[in-house]
Length: 403
View 1 (tube, rainbow, N blue to C red):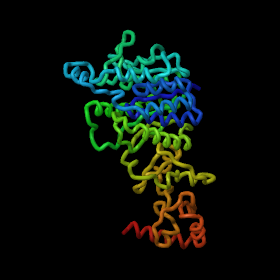
View 2: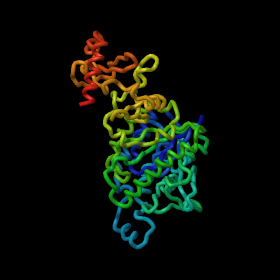
View 3: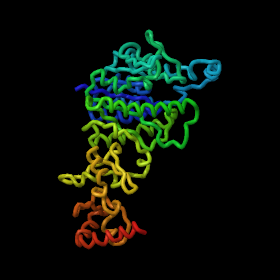
View 4: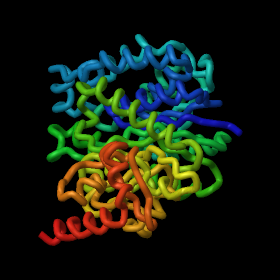
């Protein structure tokens, strides 16, 4: 089995990949090769050169120190050139300097793990770079149209790999991967309005294109390759042109990826439906049941499992997380069967006329219904007169709903 890490594009949101990468490496994942496009090409090349925890830490430091002007220095010279008909808004000198300063290898083939960089030629065809100067390859793959000039490599004038017809996922499959782990960047799903400036708006549109391409790719690959997509961040209000939030993005992605791994994110392939982003549902607030998978309470053994934001279902104004797609699908088919009674409130308190949040660790199933209580002492009180307590709690809950 050949495992590939795929690094998608996404501007400043490439910091999200670093947080995900941290947890994958800690979990012992080591790819047979990596594929990257756009900003993902930079992350892919750096990681391929230093594919260990120390290398990821070094990549984190680069991102934490990164500023917009390190990549997009709008100078009087570039502004005048733009008005005089120059082919791009920014010169690529600063980006080239950044890549040269930090990339540990001179040529792609020198990396410890084979690395492949996806770029696009002027006809829109995909060009996969696997040998030759690493700086030129990354610079070409990150050459966002209008923002940066194209890069000539051989007979081709190359630009951003994120707009290639053959995306990094499909490229990885063609290169022989039978298992693909995608480190996505996602997109700013909760911004209040259009980003300021033409480049920022263009980059936001590019992240939307990448997200749509990813869903398409999973449909094209079908069951031929196991594809596992690390979770996106939601809500996310950071523009891909904003480099001030890298540290926060790294930490958020690290926490979310760890939860995804703990919930068995690598145990089964990601389906296209799981990439559908229902931001409105994700904005309902903290996950119900403390983030625990309520379907898991009903399984043999009844051991509650922590859910993942990768598998979600909404019911009665609350968002539930699930450990896997099977549990999510079971819940969506019959949410009333699995949702905790009284909206997850303490059952004994409800029977006594109070409204107190229940603890998902202190639970009881009776008659196929899941009840939470506040603590073990309260739970013992609940069980002393179970039938009457359920009757009173039901009556008070229904009255509360009708009020």
